Amino acid sequence: MSAEARLREQVCLFAKSLYDRGLTPGASGNISARMEDGRLLVTPTGSCFGRLDPARLSVLDQNQRHVDGDKPTKEVALHAAFYETRPAQTGAVVHLHSTHSVALSMLPETDPDNMLPPLTAYGIMKLGKVKLLPYFMPGDPAMGDAIRGLAGKRSAVVLAHHGPVVAGKDIEAACYAMEELEETAKLAILTRGLHPNMLSEAEIGGLVRTFNVEWED
Image 1 (cartoon, one colour):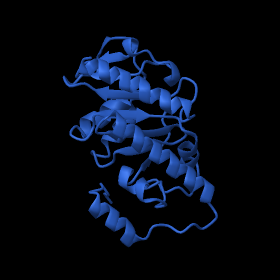
Image 2 (spheres, helix red, strand yellow; image 1 turned 135 degrees about the vertical axis):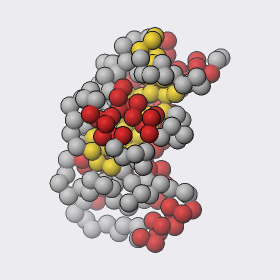
Image 3 (cartoon, one colour; image 1 turned 120 degrees about the vertical axis):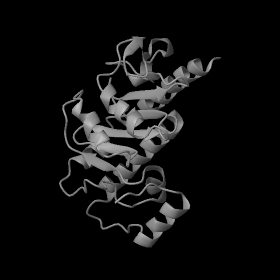
């Protein structure tokens, strides 16, 4: 099996896993993965993560032009911005409409610069600080501009009223980090108002230093 064929299978495998566990409903969400020659495999517009066909994935050239497969997601600009601003660290991008992270994005007390409270070590290790971006109409190219405005300093963002976007070194890393984001958002919702014990600044600092976490102010 060629490297491209393996990557096509991986995209569909991880997408179905996310769908089967209710992390993105209906025909929502999109995934992209960079091939060895710099082209992108992208999930098609209007497609369901539970029923993707590896042979029908969209293919974009190095300039994000559609060259093969079904019509790509309308949110290509969102993905392209991560590949442009974090080229060395980004081999895949995952965008979902997951319930708890969207819910957290709508609460007025959520910190837009670091929207996940420091509840678990892995939330910090896998994600660093998660930026809450404002609402954009789905497909609006301005979403990509907002990510470019972060100058490559964040690997994960949440679009208010919409959903999270995570970039990783490969599709496995991006999906696992995405799952950590949603689970941490779930914990934040479950413990809201209960005054949970947070990780201390010293404990956060230890994680950042030990695991080389991106932790920009």
